[in-house]
Amino acid sequence: EHARGELQPVEPDQLDFLVGYEGEREAGGRGLPHGTGRWRGVAAGGRRMMTYEGQWARGRFEGQGTLTFNEDCTYTGEWLRGRSVGMA
Image 1 (tube, rainbow, N blue to C red):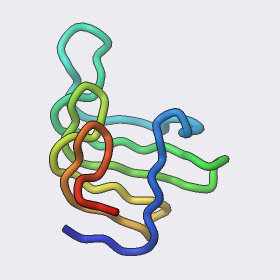
Image 2 (image 1 turned 90 degrees about the vertical axis):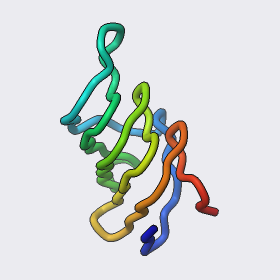
Image 3 (image 1 turned 60 degrees about the horizontal axis):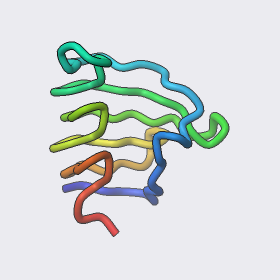
Image 4 (image 1 turned 135 degrees about the vertical axis):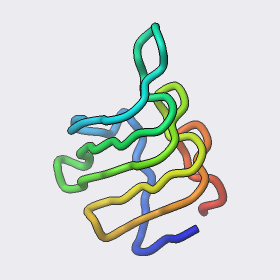
C-alpha cells in the first residue's frame, strides 16, 4: 500500500466529464467497466485530473488498483464498491 499527498474522495456524480476508459467491460447489459482497465476523468471544475488503473466490478473500482490525482497524489491498495479500503 502506498499513499502520498492529500487524497480527498470524489464521488462519481462530482465528475465533470470522463476522458476515457480502456479495458474489459461486462458482457451484455450496459457494458460497464468490469475486470481490469484504466480510466481517466476530470473533477472539481477541471482542476483535478484523475487516473485509476486496476480492477473493476460493475462500473466501480473493486479489488486492487491505483488512483492518482493531478499526478502528485496517489493511493494504491484495495477498493470495495468504488471506495478505498483501510484509508481514513
